[in-house]
Amino acid sequence: MNKRLIVALDVPDLKSAKKLVKILYPTVEIFKVGSILFTACGQEVINMVHKAGAQIFLDLKFHDIPNTVARAAEEAVKAGVFMFNVHASGGTKMMSETVQATRKMAANLAKPKPLVLAVTVLTSIDESDLRQQGILKSVKEQVLYLATLAKEAGCDGVVCSVEEAQAIRRNLGSDFVIVTPGIRPQGSDLTDQKRISTPRNAIEAGADYLVVGRPIIEAQDPLAVSNKMLEEMGM
Image (cartoon, rainbow, N blue to C red; front, side, top):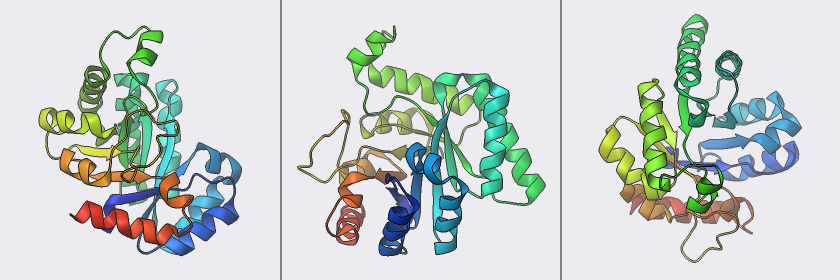
């Protein structure tokens, strides 16, 4: 069950990230490196997490022309990350070329192929935000639509909120990976998230991996909170 909890290293520098990894590993075995920390530290933070023995979810949400994203995916393979993501809204061609490039580079280097995930609709977005973008579908409809495109393009799974996880599992099958951010213990503040859930609800909805950031990394005792969440996930 430990391998299903991903802690987001949403901190500004390598020192802070290293401290968290030292506290949490091996209770937590996968850490998410996002745009803030990667921009600050780059490959250095990836090397640090790997040296500690943990795995990485590279959360850079690639979204560009197909060739550019495919080349970025090749670099993610070289870095040895466990999973990385692209924006599904980048289109089928972008996703398909990225998947193909990932497979080819992994085979060439004789490395495990990272999971390629498609970001559907960010958990900070609700239907009023979609309307501003000219999208008239409901959030759930848009997420399922993008998830279907991602599967057709060969992606291993998606990033979505728990609210859409059940529909994705039902429509796209048991082997399609679902990663759910926006996980909060019962009674937590929403902060800037609009579609959140508890660990128990996420597992019951069919999520494979749960991403937790602030409730753990801002806690006085991050390890205790991690263990509490793992207990909830184990039911």
